[in-house]
Amino acid sequence: MNGAAATIGRDLGRIFQALAGLLFVSLLVPLVWGEYWAMPALFISGLVPFVIGYALTARFQGATQPSKLHGMIIAATGWFCVALFGSLPFLFIAWTLEVGLPFVETPSQTATLAAFTDPLNAVFESMSGFTGTGLTMTDNEEVLPRTLQWWRSFIEWVGGVGVIVLTTAILSRPGSGSLTLYESEARSERIHPSIVSTVQTIWWIFLLFTFVSILLLWVVGMPLWGAINHAMTGLSTGGFSITDNSIATYDSAAIDFALIPIMLLGSIAFPVHYLILQGDLRNFYTDLQTRWVFIYMSAGTVVLTALVYATDTYDTLFTAFRYSSFQFVSAATCAGFQTAVDTTNVALGRWPAQAQLIVAFGMIVGGAAGSTAGGIKLIRSITLLKGIRFRVAEVFYPETAVRRLKINGRRLDEREVRQEFEEAAIISFLWFVFLAAGTFGLLVILPQGEYTLENVIFEVASAQGNVGLSAGITGPESLPTLGKVMFLFNMWIGRLEIIPVLVTLRTILDRGGLYR
Amino acid sequence: MKIGDLPYVGDPLEEGAEDRVFDSLLLLGPVIVALIAVLGRSALTTGIAIAYLSSFVGYVLYRGVLEGA
Image 1 (tube, rainbow over the protein chains, first blue to last red):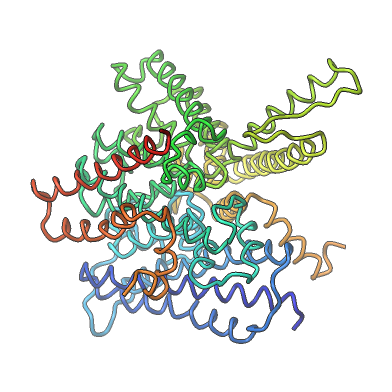
Image 2 (image 1 turned 45 degrees about the horizontal axis):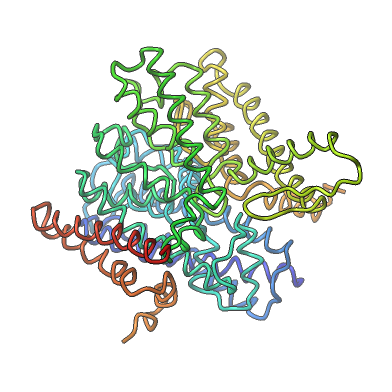
């Protein structure tokens, strides 16, 4: 076994052990809710990654620290394997009800849960959860056992911050190559010089905000179990719900408006949260991304409100504002909660096509880098816009002029501008390439004439942006097998910002002799 | 026993804003959620939850004003 495989094996082992810990902790839920029949399935689901993880870490204990290449491979394969192992509770619990248990009485099987007897549906749900997407293979979340309702919310909550961030916070120690792994999981901002301290602080902030969110939702009228689950999935901008109609089930303006700040909290970078908790409130407007979170959300809300009100989608201006503000924030923060649903439970079903495309635009841009939100990210969009303006303005200056570009308080010289612009352009270009490829693929796969082009673009953007709003295409029956596999890939690359997945695929093809 | 001595979660909990009020709010959060789970929705539990939220928002603003001054 060579050194690279040992390093990757050791770190994957740590990630699997952390995942096993999440599964073992979750045993409390069936215990509290009296779903004892779910406990063996959950225990075995935890035992599998624990044993594999333990074997890998023990076998490769003395492996070297990961390089940048290793980090990317660990992040990509780690996330994929976590989605695989994370699907076991769905699969095993569904099969427990299918075949029954000898000593414990099991409830009767439901059509919703039976969908998870298909391993692909279980992996889809798990990948959607961990990546914070929120597209689902369930028909009716309300009939799911509490254990699976919790597991769906829990994996979104953990995935929002990051599986590697979790592993680093709990299992790693300073100087163990944590920075390389941290950066491979689409994060770069530091709160403290030490990366372990940084990720521990991120978890501290996330935990505090979770309790604040739970109590806020409960105070405005949501039942406690719903408040716990929706606070976790709202703050992590994941968007899984425990109700059939998402947040529309509650039909409460107070709950809608309480969820908006929770989703916004999730779309602001953790280092900014840290500074604000330290008392530096100026970061709300001095930090470029945070300032633009508010400008962009406000502008989107105003445009959408005007559009849906002008097209008579809603009777009153307040109702138009209520649904537009919630849906734009839900899309742009990549949470994916729904309030504007029609009788067929399709997101934005009553809305005109141009309003749906504005929401799709929000999903593509996404929230701040360093937050739990998906999409291309605000900082990249701003860098692209400023970079284009910088290039266009170049012809108006003499060749000898020394010019600098100011982004987020930093004054970049020509070389730095080129570097930042190139990075933003590459990610954005790849993002649109995969969006176009996914749209084309889905148009080929889906039955002709059943969905419009804007429906298909909306659905692919939702999967790749890790949003979770659905135009009705995603479902255990409605989405063909090839479409599910394609969406698994879209969600995976969307969460890791594409590059680590491409690097991993190239490495695999290279090793297999297919690339060269 | 200090919070940092707790297995696994000790280190992460010891980090954060390094502020006693925020640390207390973090530790009180699960206690209040458990209390609500046991007692249900009542004037008392609603009052406690509102007090918790007010303390959080109030303290963030207080620190902001204090730091800004």
